[in-house]
Image 1 (tube, rainbow, N blue to C red):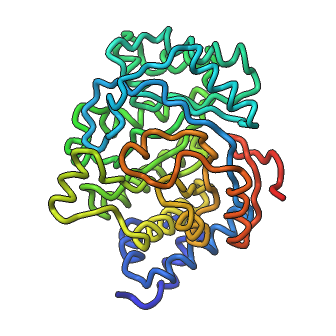
Image 2 (cartoon, rainbow, N blue to C red):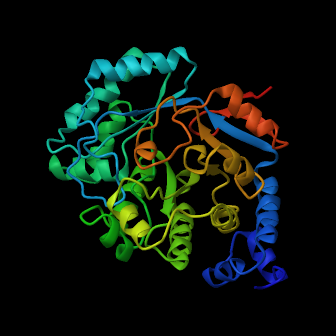
Length: 362
């Protein structure tokens, strides 16, 4: 193990130019040194504010024709929410002060674009001030294919119906080798990039994600982060990078791992990749989100001194991670979010989906 971070790599980090070769070297240094560098870069990029969003997840269906080996959500209850149910959940969110609803679901056999448009337009007609963050790249790809449309035309129609931003999920690991193992039949790396860059070109900002800790190598994780950086250099359309440690419970990939004596990533490894993400994305994507649902509240707080500057949302309900074995809850009160941030020595700031400050936390 290297004992210190070489000066040339530190210089590259501040310039936002760390290479793959040097990223691999950073994994060999003592973890606390890595966390410290990431924390210094975080402070330079965004200061001491830690942001959060008051939002609600609405998973409108668990019906899915997909075959993802990491999923425990599919057909758990075999439900499809009516439009009235979605509006009721949105109303509850608005009454609780939410500024965003995040809408995603499984891949419906009969994925009629009009149905997806109606969800958006109904929400906008009834709650015009709520921000609609909806539909993953896989859902967009599936909709385009099912309705005989281009990706561009599909996104344009959804945008005209009220779509404002998109989650950059379905990325998993952007390696076709990995994707063939964990999600055969899902859109490939190039197709994911095409959906994302098309959305950015049409004025739809997205998040970027990485689900790690299953069959991928650490080198493939680095390649993934660098691919996100490359896209951001072209489009500037990513608002944040969200690391999602794999939950190896109640799903085929996880069961196979556990049978082989492998388990979820440990806390040190999680923090190493939060730090490495900050270092590789410095000057490109300012916001690194620590998912409290995946990490747990205490480790998410430690991530705030390892490169992260955002703790995500209140969620109000979260079905996908919890179905795969996450035991950290489906909702967190704003008061508790602020407490976690303040007790980390940082300043809580409520934001909207686009990272514009709504109010400084008190």
